[in-house]
Image 1 (cartoon, helix red, strand yellow):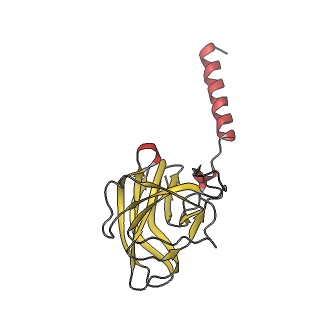
Image 2: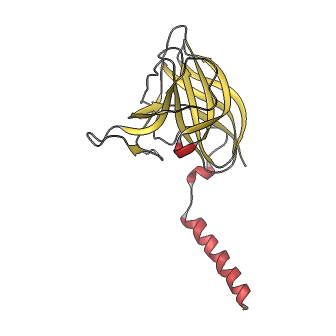
Image 3: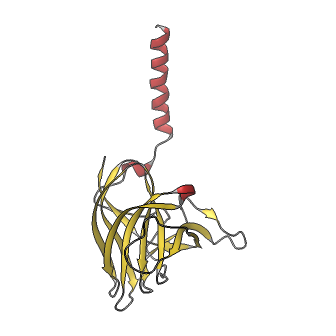
Length: 200
């Protein structure tokens, strides 16, 4: 075998080895399902929103995909109030940056699943799902356990993790960009999710 042929063969072999050893289960997720921030379970966990606070919740697109819904499940209602859902690109130093889409409003005056329709093609990378409300509803929340991008906020009790961001924002259309944010250092973060329409 010639030198060049040998190099090509070894590169092909090495590529196969890399695929076998760097398998990422987030690259083969099901379409038509909702996926959250990679921060563990959102079944029994809740996270009450603060009024006029815009939250950024991480979403990792492990490969190119399209998404067609943003959703949140409200456990405890806020009478006469609403929430607004959206999506941001990753900015500097893993902060939410430029607005991708302002999905619009949902009512949080009743409990249950609240969704907005979008149509966005995402490239591989980190994004930030967003929610802001003019009230204090309590949606399902993601626990910090199993988070893909946590950093420890305090070592005093081992419970406070930085698993997102927030910024003060008077309820209304989502700002662009997200703005100078504060770390959301707590054990849960609002359980916003995206529905994956296709894997590209």
